[in-house]
Amino acid sequence: MFRMKNKLNNLYNANREVKFALVGAGKMGKGLVNQLSRIKGLTSSVVIDEKPEKAMEALISSGVRKSDITTSDNIKIIENSIKNGMYVVSDDYSIACKLQDIKGVVDATGNPPFGAILAMEAIENRKHTIMLNVECDAVIGPYLFNLAKKKNVIYTGSAGDEPGAIMELADFALGAGFKLLAVGKGKNNPLNHYITEDEVREEAISKGLYPKMLAGFIDGTNTMIELTSAANALGFVPDVIGCHGPNTTPAELAKIFSLKEQGGILNNYKTVDFAFGVAPGVYAIVTSDSDEVHDLMKYLKMGDGPNYAIYRPYHLTSLETPITIYNAIVEKESTIVPACGQVSDTVTVAKKDLKAGEILEGIGGKSVFGTITSHADQKNRNLLPIAMITKKTKLKVDVKKDELITLDMVELDEDHIITKLRRKQDKLGL
Image (cartoon, rainbow, N blue to C red; front, side):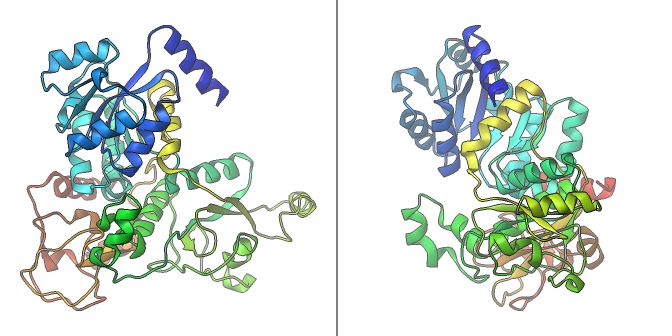
């Protein structure tokens, strides 16, 4: 981190600050703007939200004076404002992709259909693209990553998001010479597949969250999507559809996530999973084929083996995103990418009995929740990835509660870019 601090200080002193655009000024976006105000050399010069007052509030809460913020939609005025060290607020995401001085775009919307539109436009305009929108990454990340490589820009998930935190542990473990057996995260909320936004509205508002967002956390969809992103980075799959999700403690992780014949719960290694009792942490299960390493791990009080848990007891969400922004724009390095392609998928399950003709509500809605499976299973059973649901996704048949929804059960919005990109991704075998 001293490298980052020193380089950014040098850029700041040379009047060459790294300027980027943030799209989405909700809880994560607002936190990011405030954290950035403490970092010289890295500036969220453009903040965009469908409600511009939220973008304005994010900047002002971080210490920016209202007189230093422009709300013009004129590109020339905006460019001059940015050159003069001012900030821009808008509800037009396309501005972020057009400005010459903007080197990267951060998507903090959590909206997969919109994320597809934004990422495509950003990459096509050769902007480094930082995804806090893991919901989008989990369904079309391989296509976006492949396109970014062709355009010679960085596409990356974020440090602080649980997939990014998992990847840091995996990178550490593999770099140190361990064998990586399994990875996962703690479940932050109780699990209730059938929760609705109406039931959590009061709690969500008190926490500064959208009710659908909190419902998506509690019904498990968010966990499944995060694990899908990690799986696609590592080439791992869930051991069983939906994962095991045991109750455990950090001290018991290594034993629990061992093979059944070793006293654990797993049928196979190279898996992703989640656990209660270790939130908000992430973990990697490792081993070694060296007796000397096992002896030293025991001496270091890492357990009796043969498996060991590398555990990180926190993830700081968007407060860690500045590290990814710096690495992407300055060092041209990613935090986490779907380098192994679409290895796993978060597919769609009915929350209740549904009728033909109903418009499905996506993540966090009243219609469905998501569960993780291998991409091979998704293809074989023609299952509907939940992040492909848009406002025009309509059921063609009746569906029973807890039934997996297949692609031939629904009318997709074939004109939407997220549908087109997933179709292309599947055709290319990414």
